[in-house]
Amino acid sequence: TCGICVEKCPFDAIEIINLPSELDEEPVHRYGDNAFSLYGLPTPEPGNVTGILGPNGIGKSTAVHALAGEMVPNLGDHESEGDWERVLDRFRGTGLQNYLGSLKEGDVTVARKPQYVDQIPNQFDGNTRELLERTDERGALDSLIDRLNIGPVMDQPIDSISGGELQRVAIAACLARDADFYFLDEITPYLDIGQRMVVARLIRELADDDAAERSMLVVEHDLAILDLLADTLHVAYGEPGAYGVITDPKSVRNGINEYLKGYLDNENMRIRPSAITFEEHAPRVSSRSETLIEYPDLSKSYGEGEFELHVEGGEINRSEVLGVVGPNGIGKSTLAKLFAGSLEPDEGALDFALDIAYKPQYIEIDQPMRVDAFLSSITDQFGSSYWNTEIAQPLQLDRVMEQNLSDLSGGERQRVAIAACLSEDADLYLLDEPSAHLDVEQRVRATTAIRRYAENHDATVMVIDHDIYMIDLLADRLMVFDGEPAERGHATPPQEMREGMNEFLADLDITFRRDERTGRPRINKPGSQLDSQQKRDGEYYYST
Ligand code: ADP
Ligand code: ADP
Ligand code: MG
Image (cartoon, rainbow, N blue to C red; front, side, top):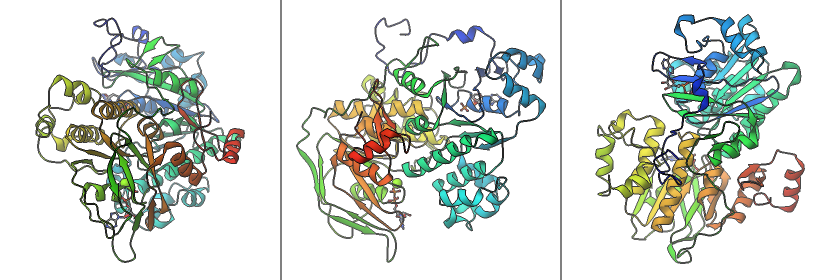
């Protein structure tokens, strides 16, 4: 509680009010008077994958500059900029002592994967092959190209390949190097679950090569992947842009559980007013059995010999949240466009007269218009206390209201687009990849906002996403896509979550269990006893 309300805070979006005790101490680094301050540093450990979990703007990159030796932390004092001895003194007796010692001696080589891969084409002129060739320091490049399925774009110019391809190229370029310290700032953007798993395995294998003693540090906002991949976890919290605290390492399970609970046990620190809870889908009580849309078998192709989609006919129930999952390039967005009416099916007709609110995967809201003007043009509820509580606060729109749409970052644009979609008065809300570009905190809040909106309005919602936590928290039923990416796709009718997840995960050869304490889904380590048992039982998702 913030001291104003005594009980549970009614606003989910309230910032941390009680300052952490770390703030009594000197920071590790402060950019200037009243500028951003960082408290704490992550601890790289040879043979380990160390994860960092927390919002953007909280000092993760700053910490990595320090750990990569690109900057000597000033311990909050500008006078003594550049003094390694003081930094070593400060961390003597901690897990960082050895690492910082080697760093000071210049014995640490670093490989990194930048957060925003979209910027790589601005920095590199040439094709994929030319970019990757210079990184082949371990003789592992060919195998990385193969496992990340980069082969098809080897001879394409870097500025012509898609986001998902760019992400895999950037990851290959980082992992191909021979370094002591690998830093990967987000590994999942633009990737589907199968591709995320491949990347997680590659990082794991590199860490497990004992002789090489490599330390891996990964920032990641997909909790399922972070959980699978990391050995230890630092939670990062604070006030984006003002200060950030990186906790001491926690076990991954505890770190994620505490993060979701909104309360850090060791630090005695509340980081969110309310907990995120996973239930094993008690179906929402509503008029669920009533049908909103009944649609026939549909097909759509983009022309002779190009991608072809076949959709089995089915029904969407009134007031349900329908999750949609499947690999990249399999036709999910094509289906969304068919429902939204921006594409016509070749076979089968969609002749319902419904109002559809549609948030496309690639958001095009680039008018020279302010966010507040844009949103108030969509709903006359704009600015009402109801709209503020249900939409603006959880999506943290207050900080962007006065900005121009064309100046927004990817994450800001995503939140404005979700708000715009939910602000419409519609029969069906279609959200195509709402988690894209959002950090973990924004995902958690957006998920809460979408779920609450669906419940309070008896709204029918269709959510396409790769984030299993988001799908698990939101969906009542599931539509599953399979096929051959970029060639042909097939969509099942909506099915029960358990059935749908089983089908989807069997295809991927991944099993999930549920955390005993919190019910959250956790990916089983491939080949573990549980993994094998669940595969034998055909229970890919719901077992405990
Ligand atoms: P994260 O990686 O968690 O997103 P960063 O470490 O990049 O966070 O940034 C944390 C804060 O520090 C941000 O508010 C950013 O604006 C600020 N910052 C980063 N670099 C500098 C700098 N060189 N000078 C002043 N402020 C900076
Ligand atoms: P998903 O959303 O599942 O990633 P999409 O529906 O966006 O898949 O695309 C499926 C396939 O159709 C991809 O191979 C994509 O390149 C192709 N495709 C999408 N839109 C068009 C278009 N307008 N013209 C030709 N091919 C397209
Ligand atoms: Mg898509």
